[in-house]
Amino acid sequence: MTDKKTQEPLRLSKLMSERGLCSRREADEYIAKGLVRVNGEIVSELGTKVLPDVRISLEAEAMRNQKRLATIIVNKPIGYVSGQPEPGYEPAIRLVNDRNQFGLGKRVLQRGDLQGIAVIGRLDIDSQGLLIFSQDGRLAKKIIGENSEIEKEYIVRVQYHGREPRLPEEKLKLLNYGLSIEGEKLKPAIVEWINEDQLRFVLKEGKKRQIRKMCEQVDLEVKGLKRVRVGKLKLGDLPEGRWRFLEDHEEI
Image (cartoon, rainbow, N blue to C red):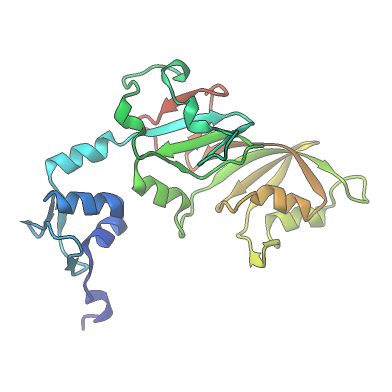
């Protein structure tokens, strides 16, 4: 017997996003331009609802557009903000210019590469390391979507201010699991010492200033924070203040 709920119609753009064809915004654009087929027929009316098991395909123009979407990797220095800046602050996207491109490959920066580009997973002004900008809404959903399981790895230099000579094992265990921020329990993390004053954090979420707030709760002061990995993508040898395109063979 067919589950009635699973057969309820959905907005076509929502279904396209769920299937990873494109973002909902892009889906609406493609539908309006007549670049989407449902069961072989062009659909061009925004808001169209379809059954969940329909066959959806993109026309060649839409497919080409998806392949052209730019994803840019920046090694953000301290002092730059990730998103929309307040007056007097320098946004990290300004580092993305012809002079700062690292390891010139097949692709060079074009004017359209920065149109509609957005930061995915911010780093605060006092933090540095791997920062991703992309025009691809699918990638944003994968990395920072509500159900994302993508790991983010950080190297964090700390100073302990507790009563004991060094951070007790119980407090290290709390960093791995047991802390809350603003009443919300944090997901399990991997937190371990890599030397006497640096910790490795691996998180599957990214609340605002999360690592600093976690450290405060166990009497640690963050002296330096650097993101070195997002999913499978590593910062690698990208110099500070430089950027490069995500290569076709790279995965996140």
